[in-house]
Amino acid sequence: MSTLSTPSRPLPTPAPVLWSDPERQRQFQSWLASIQVHFALQPETLRLASADASFRRYLRIDTQRGAHAESLIIMDAPPDKENSAPFVKVAQLLHDAAIRAPEVLDWQQEQGFLLLSDLGAQTMMQVIDPAAPPPLNLYLQAVDTLIAWQKASRPGVLPPYDHALLRRELELFPQWYIGQHRQWALDEAQRKVLDTAFETIIAENLAWPQVYVHRDFMPRNLMAPMLVAARTALPPEGALQNSSQLGVLDFQDAVFGPITYDIASLVRDAFLSWDEDFCLDVVVRYWQKAREAGLPVGDDFGVFYRAVEWMGLQRHLKIAGIFARLSLRDGKAHYLADTPRFITYIRATCGRYRELKPLLRLIDKMEGIEEPNVFGFGRSPGAA
Image 1 (tube, helix red, strand yellow):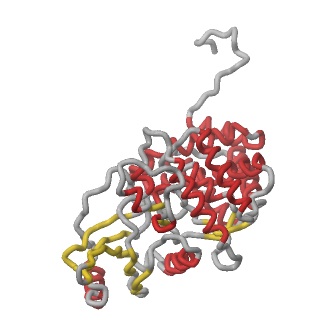
Image 2 (image 1 turned 90 degrees about the horizontal axis):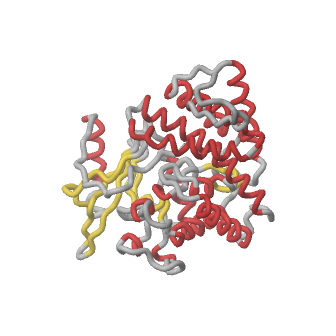
Image 3 (image 1 turned 120 degrees about the horizontal axis):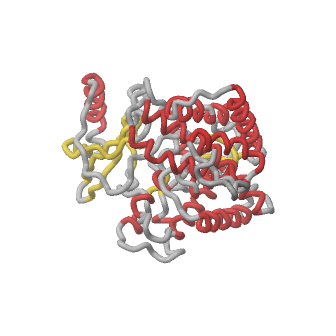
């Protein structure tokens, strides 16, 4: 799974920049000094912008060119822990597709420092009120962005989202969620249930055509248009122009994989849940626009929506494992608070398809969920 942005609401107070490694701090200061004049940087304005679920963090710094002031973003990605080359490559692919994404202005490759353009301080998630009706106009702009990204797809450019990678991701669920978080030891029969389900899920996923896949295409990784971020109310549907489009972040783990993946990420969010009717509406609109754009989404929406659900199932099993790992291995305990959302997604999908019922029964047993016995009408509540 790609890394995740920082928690979204409310906007954090800018934090000072602290360094745990004096040598890395020295390297950073030397690099910053080497580009300071060229980019009119103001080092005294340096502050923490955000961190994510990886070892990357992001700093913000102001610039001053005459009367023109703006801010830029610095990515701090230690090269022994993070490879920045995919970020640079995918950023260029996004720009080539006319998608708003950070521009790489300078890259100190050996030390893992990047100077980037700043897309603003508010994500799509931050301008959404979860208690209000979902903002269809923003989701439709996300759909348009996704279609532009998929239309730019070419084979052989990004790593394949193949059987091996899909299976490695699925294995995070028994390793970290079941084994480490739930402390559940699978017996041979239970392991067979998982293996059978995993192979069925992967086969369904790989049956669909391949395109560029962001792998975390959701509101926390989409930057709100300046037009929206500056308003207290959202503009009418259709009012957003290309000059103020959604921006795309956190794309460094992009791959070439099933066309169903990113739309599943968008409507089955890791941090935000909407009613089924809204999710269905967004997927229908995506499918219609994708067909008009010549993308290979098929002629039967029911078949496509089934595929989106099965792709979402793979993603949610993976994320449950990743969030358990972030909490238990990396000390980021707040991620476990969102795991009930994934279990809800998983159970809902498994409950809809006969092939997945054994997986549903296993998860229910592990979660301590007991379905009512519809044949036990004559038994008292305390009967054995």
